[in-house]
Image 1 (cartoon, rainbow, N blue to C red):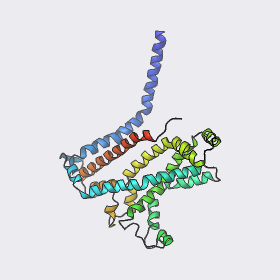
Image 2: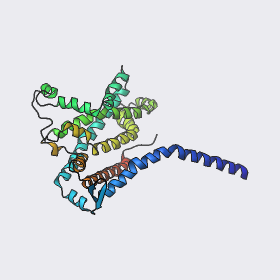
Image 3: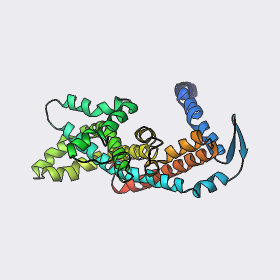
Length: 298
């Protein structure tokens, strides 16, 4: 009996060792590409960059200067405002598209490909097309609306224009994830509800929405993180010489300007740490609040 237990223990140890070997590349990659750069960034946020990889420890000066900088608070509000514009509307449209693609319609595969197409397009190509659409002189949007709105230079509408592009780009990917959640819902729930006389609206709020809420929660977290880290879209949509830049500049855009334009790596690192902290706070709030609306019971 003891020999059998020892053999099982040896076999279990071998399986455990092989498990560690299999996950080792991922763990090493995580440590090298994520953990160590974050530690370096955290250290750099307390230092002054002297060039050529040399830093001088200056304590909290970078954070003090950051909190006293009006551009920083403007960028923080721009980032939050961008989330407010994109996340709720994007989730609603993605869920609507997923429900339509889950219905019994002809050519569902074609429509799924069409909605997912923006995700496989290069961001530079996407923004170039949308810049042409938003052009105030010959843009197709002003031609259709019969107006002359400066979509990309007017401080009042430039953030809305960027939000439209962000929502359009993410709908397909989010809809595919939500579609997978919808297809996991058993049809027996709907059959039982129909027998009880429940209509489509009642079925949606009492069956579809609760059952797809775990997937919706994951999409919400992903979309919030992407919106809080937005950079490339704004960088390509709004030029450095644009007078409306300060009204659309995000935290990551400000990090780029501080680190690579102004050459202040310490200030840029402080902005990154602030962004990580902001993402952490939002994520914690979402995980705490999920208990009130996410249903994990089957």
